[in-house]
Length: 448
Image (cartoon, rainbow, N blue to C red; front, top):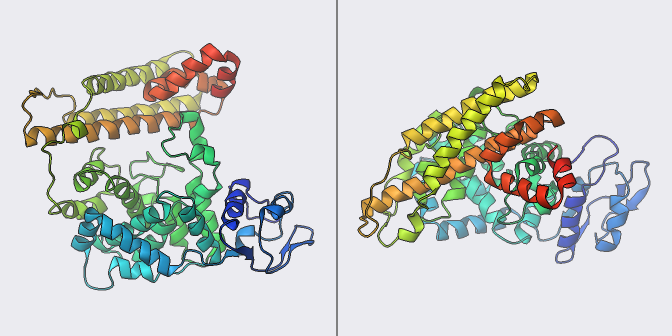
């Protein structure tokens, strides 16, 4: 996490990305760069290079490095608009959502085109764009959706702009995280999650320090992983404590994550309603029509996309039941003397019960009774919903495991909670077992 107090240390992970970028684009000092004692390290106009990396990392700086460098030809309003055109050309679902939420006034693309950001944030967006993958397209998608959702929720033009900026910048805090925890397809274990949960707060600090935006922009970035029911992070805020722009960006990021998959509008509708109360009801309610009337879903010949492993649902139901019983057992056991553990368990039981009710409301506890040799399009649609619901509920259980691992800071407390964390996160259990067999001492050190 960056520290913007006096005598500022450079974040190693961010600097590594800047140096990597400098090998393909011109990165230079926009002003003289001084260390904390007033010694000049780089003169204005000096090109940043790998040869200068050690000089920047070993000294604390008088001013944040981010405010003292810029990249020539970096991401700007034009490239953001090009990204918007690109994602709209390739996503019928996104185009549909924007069309049905459009009202009088400037379109989301038009508003996005007028968003302003300085050299520091241009650098960050450029790094994200140049690292490969689709980071910039994702940020632009979240921004477009944030504007559209804010408009549908009848927020003011100012709040629409705040939501759009926050959507565009929501993940810049990830640039300060060790890349080892951000690899594509990387499944983080609960104890590793601590490296990730700080990125919303880091993003807020960067925005507030480096830009003269309304405070609502940084706040919405800090809140984009918060949830109305208090199950989000990093501060576990509940509905009224989250700004409207924060609610909007949280929903926009969730929708952006599912509309890149097959049957995007159906997935988006299901993702927002599987756990009632997770997202701001007043915002979700206004969106319900945006997920209807788009390209018609086609379920024929989709068997492989929608079949859930026969063991998935029964095993999931059993895991939920076992986790609830384990929570209650630990809570009433004589070993649970920590007030902190009791508080954590009380909240955990409520969250598991909430998930259990969601299982019943989605019909996951009911047998399908389908003939695998004769599946109609309605059967496949039902299997699709079951598949999405199962995956979402699995992720919610893992979220609880992560919270328990993060909040049980005392070794005795964590030992007490390990069996429960194992149940809630299967990979955690597998990792623990393999470590215990191969490296018992490391296993105890890592999990305690």
